[in-house]
Structure formats: structure tokens, C-alpha cells
Image (cartoon, rainbow, N blue to C red):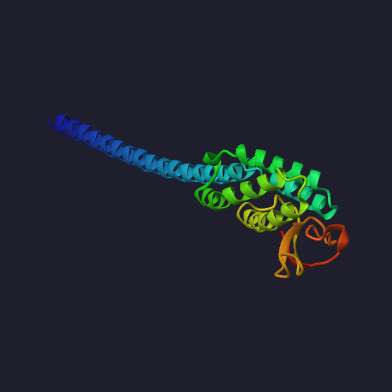
Length: 206
């Protein structure tokens, strides 16, 4: 009888020990699962941040700001040399670039900035492009285009290129007007060869 009771006690202890071990194992699995969930959540957050950053970089890269600036500078240099034909060619190239912009690639802020400027930039570039025989008319529209290009650069950057905002006090019937240049040397697009160095640098754009 004593042997039987001892056997029962031993079995009971063994069963209790197994139950406790199983419980602890279950808790370990639960803890590990929670830790894995946390790790997964962190990884997902980091992935989302990287995706957002890449998307923003991609959006900026897709907008042809470098090519638009290049077309504008070609136009500026042409007008500074009294070359209406080259100015017209640059105007047409800018219009072509604008027609190819895919606005769906832009962020909300970029889209708003572009929408505010697109019509004016296109209209002024079109006037310059279609008036190769009227350099005075081209310069009138270049004055307005320069202001819009300055705002476009503020919205989309200048692709790492150092630019200068210059000012001519005699342009616009003595009211003055700005233009954007890639060099510190003053080459006045409003007065051309008659007064090529009239003007000052107002701002360095980086």
C-alpha cells in the first residue's frame, strides 16, 4: 500500500513538473512572438521611411529642372549677344520640355508650385520662340519669364548648380528687372551689346 501511494505521489509530481515546463515554454513562445512582432513593426516603419525618401528623390529627379534652366540660360546668353534666333530656339525648347512633364510624378507641394507657374512660363517662352524677328518683344517676355524661372528654382532647386540673380536698374522703363545667370560676370540680356555690363548681383542661388 505504501509503495502504491509513493508511486501515485511521484506520478503527480512528474505531471505537475511537465505542466509548469509547458507553461513556461508557452510564455517563452508568446514573448518571442511579441518581440518578433515588434521587430517586424520596426522594420516596416524603416522600410516606409526609405520608400518615402526614395519616392521624394525620384519625384525631384523626374522634373526636368536642369534642362529648363539650361534652356533659360541659353536664351539669356542669346539675348545678351543680341541673337534673337538663338533666343527663339531656346524658347521653343522650353515649351517642349513643359509639354513632356508628367505631373503625376510630382508631390502635392511641387504640383501646386508648378500649376501656379506653368501657364506663365509656357506663354512667355512661346512668345520668345515665335518672335525671332522682334528682339524687343522677346526681351519684354524674358523679363516676366525670369521672375517665373526664379520661383521655379525655389520650388524645385537648381540641381546643385550655383546661380546668380542679377538686376538691371534700366530695364522695364527704368523700373528695373532681374535675370538668372550661371556666372558672376554681368552679361545684360535686356540691353545686349549696347550696355553689356549694366547690372549687379542681387542674390546667390544655391
